[in-house]
Image (cartoon, rainbow, N blue to C red; front, side, top):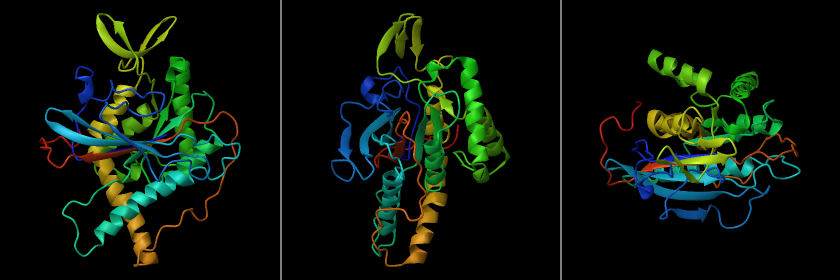
Amino acid sequence: MAWVGFGEAERVFRAGQPREQRLRGGSFPSSHCWGVGPDAEQGWEGGPGRAPGGTLVLSVTTVIEEGGVKMKLTVIDTPGFGDQINNENCWEPIEKYINEQYEKFLKEEVNIARKKRIPDTRVHCCLYFISPTGHSLRPLDLEFMKHLSKVVNIVPIIAKADTMTLEEKMEFKQRVRKELEVNGIEFYPQKEFDEDLEDKTENDKIRQESMPFAVVGSDKEYQVNGKRVLGRKTPWGIIEVENLTHCEFALLRDFVIRTHLQDLKEVTHNIHYETYRARRLNDNGGLPPVSAGTAGSQGTRDACDSPRPPVLVHLDMCPAAPVAPGVCGRA
């Protein structure tokens, strides 16, 4: 799983850009995060060591740029998620982290002398990686997405999609969508937040055809037809990460940091954050510290074949960066 945080500007980061100015070819390395340049800042959220339940929260921040537009991208990885024999409530450290970012923003917001630009570390989406079993979602997958979809935008992704045939991949995607619907799990883009007919038409196509995105990750480059491409080498050829006939990573990349960037931020602020804010102010205007646990959470046990950790993403725009017209809107 990965969490993503965004800035206020974006553009697609092409493979033709210098390595230090783009995400490394737009691939998910084995750590389930976008590759970042050598100047990236890394750190353990909440200090070193594992959180209760064995889940680490590791953040990586970098500034990416294209055409003079800069964006601060923070990817928060969660190694250790689902690795325990007893995975009861193993999503709590992740949910706690997301709520802590809401709490930080809320405390700044209610100050009498507020800053002109409140530091925004809120998580804008959660990339949840699904194991390519070809059968069905695990109980842990369902429980995690059921709990976290209430506090963050969930984007389901099938990992290691090259382990399935094209027919198996399409059948598995349909099965995953059906299971999410049956279990009442809303993934992004949520139907209830479509603002007009154009949005509904576009998002229906994404929900019914693209979701969940099936991706292949690699941080290695190979020579293909005279060009250097990111891919995975197999006995029968090279699986290219950015080739749409091989992998849907390019669709996922454009979806997250191009066409739906601003909408992800708006849904986070207007829906998830406002829900948290209303509950906190209603419970106690004094804003006491948030409790470590989440009351009323129901656990699940799933000891077989640990899932890939979720990844959170936070996007934040560099203050001095010029904003090109239409950059933050939908394409």
